[in-house]
Amino acid sequence: MIRLTYRIETPGSVEAMASKIASDQSTGTFVALLGETEELKARVAARVVAVRPLPPTHQASFPDERGDATQFDRADVDIDFPMDAVGTDLSALMTIAIGGVFSIKGLTGIRIVDMKLPKEFATAHLGPQFGVAGSFALTGVTDRPIIGTIVKPALGLRPHETADMVGELIEAGVDFIKDDEKLMSPAYSPLKDRVAAIMPKILAHEQKTGKKVMYAFGISHADPDEMMRNHDMVLEAGGNCAVVNINSIGFGGLAFLRKRSGLVLHAHRNGWDILTRHAGLGFEFSVWQQFWRLLGIDQFQINGIRVKYWEPDESFVQSYRAVSTPLFSEDDRALPVVCSGQWGGQAPDTIAATGGSTALLYLCGGGIVSHPGGPGAGVKAVKQAWEAAAAGVPLDAYAKDHPELAQSIEKFADGKAA
Image 1 (cartoon, helix red, strand yellow):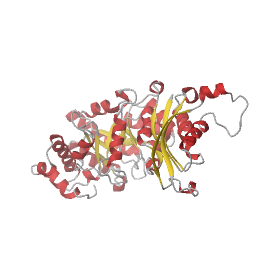
Image 2 (cartoon, one colour):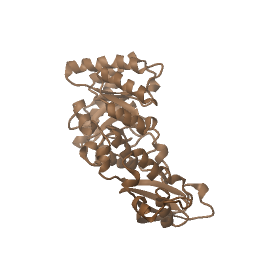
Image 3 (cartoon, rainbow, N blue to C red):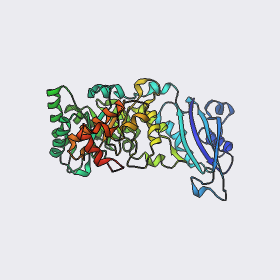
Image 4 (cartoon, rainbow, N blue to C red):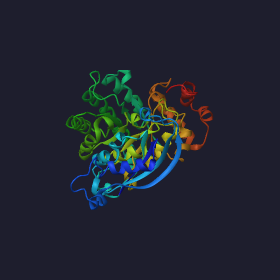
């Protein structure tokens, strides 16, 4: 059985609505059909297996559906779908168990809050090729987070200018650099020219030091063949990582890429917010991320502590736990990528929130490239912040002997944007 947990909100009976969801999403029809036997229903019908009441609400998540009601009952409902009816195809799972429920009449709200898949899904999908262990092995990082930064398209950097910045970041000891998700192949910085300008610097540094900085090039494209050509361009130049905008390329695009990929696949989740931002509608990230991990994502951006966007800290903590928890084995975990307004000042709280773990990629954009001493000093400041946090030393105290961290605190502390 495939178990989905729905948070149902309705002015009517929660139990009746749960039964309607199970029926409508499996064997239910508007009128009886020839051949619709009880034996068939017993074999492929979805079943309500648990109803856990929640406190009612007085605000309808779908206001147009409230009618004259002033109270809306809620419950978390477990519904099991037989494997015979769904199989292991993720598009079928999304269509049958999730896609149709939002159109059912009588609901004022519905949210997918949990999903438990049987072991058949583990062998049906490739999962991460590199994951947590591979990301650390390729960057040569041990016993601390991978420290990374972002080339922002708002800077308007041309390929040779981007390469100059990359050279400074490499010399400062950064582990990871990525194209911003909006930087794919614009006229001012075509991917081909960017790869040609950046990879020689990365390879020269590797030749000199033995350390290969991981650079994630933006290869996303709506045409899977074009995306694959972008992938091949990066791989043939000696690159080892790619940014993929997973909502933009879709399940099929990612599956096509993963089957042929030789690169670490770094997921940007732009567009996820519209699926989750209303607490009574959409998805929990813990459900949504399972699809992408099964399809082969190695690294997953999940925001961070005190982000510049809407997401509260508790949501980040839940996302961190989700991508760090095995679905079926340790190898199917994705590397959590902590990002969005990070500058090093959040390092102590990040360690506390993740239970002391440093198994993450700590990604700073402005927190590194906008450092008063330049991007190189920005890298040093973030490393110093993590050294202090890991040792349990307050950042202000550590900054007394570390000028880069002191400058960072002066610029970015007290809620100043990074």
